[in-house]
Image 1 (cartoon, rainbow, N blue to C red):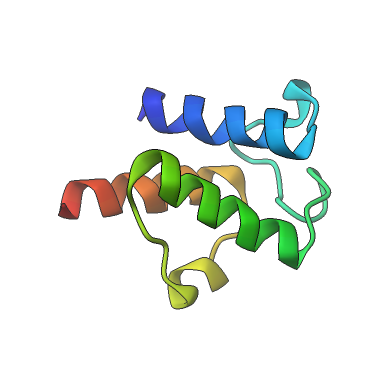
Image 2: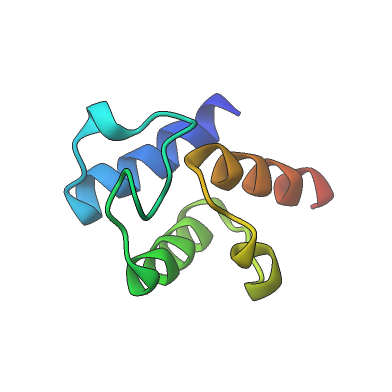
Length: 80
């Protein structure tokens, strides 16, 4: 899980220029971090490239917080 958190946070910091202090598990993607729907899609694509997991559209709809992102990726990696 630590690796997942590191990669996701790194993508948000580097690609979206998000301040690291905003990246807390309970942070809401849209309200707290400031992502929009296109950013969310880009985040999913970048995570897919870096970790080799594909978050499906149905799964993505239920993601609201960073913790949701981490857990979804963790579950997908366990299924592999």
